[in-house]
Structures are given as C-alpha cells and as structure tokens.
Image 1 (cartoon, rainbow, N blue to C red):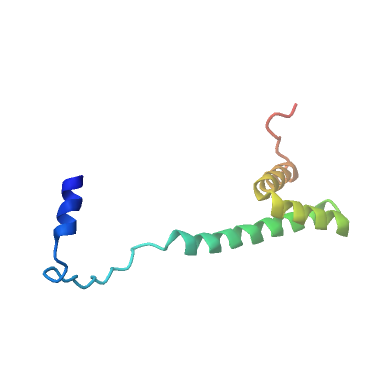
Image 2: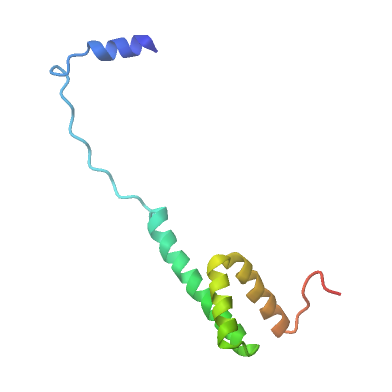
Length: 99
C-alpha cells in the first residue's frame, strides 16, 4: 500500500494533466428517489380512499374518521391490514385465524 502512495506522491501533476470527464450516459431506469416519492404519494392516497369507503360503510363519526386518518399516517402498513380485513368481511369471506 505504501508503494502506491509513494508513487502517487512522486508523480508530477504537470506531466499528467487531468483528462476531461466523460459525459455520463442516462440510466435506463428511473432513479429510486424520484419514483419512490410518487409511488408513496399514490399509495397514501389509495389508503385514504379505502379508509373513507370503510368509514362510510360503518358510519364513522367525523371524529372517528379524523382519528383513523391520523392513525393511518402514523402506521400505514397497519391500516392497510385493517382495510384489507374489512374488504374480506364485506365480501363475505372468512378471516384467517377466526373460528
């Protein structure tokens, strides 16, 4: 390792001018960050729509709806499970683990 550093220190930068940077090609996919934000927003809107439908079905009061929406912002995965189970119940299906 020291040999490499010694060689680097001994190089004359005037003899080896920096080469211009190559233009990077565009990636063949969307960056993770740009697409993730849009996907997150879409999922949040879908969850809110499903909670509103469930609230209407079960006659939530305004306060209950506000609490449900706030709880969904805090724990979206948990509330996705809640609305998934509600969809099963409304469709007449049986919840797993129930007798």
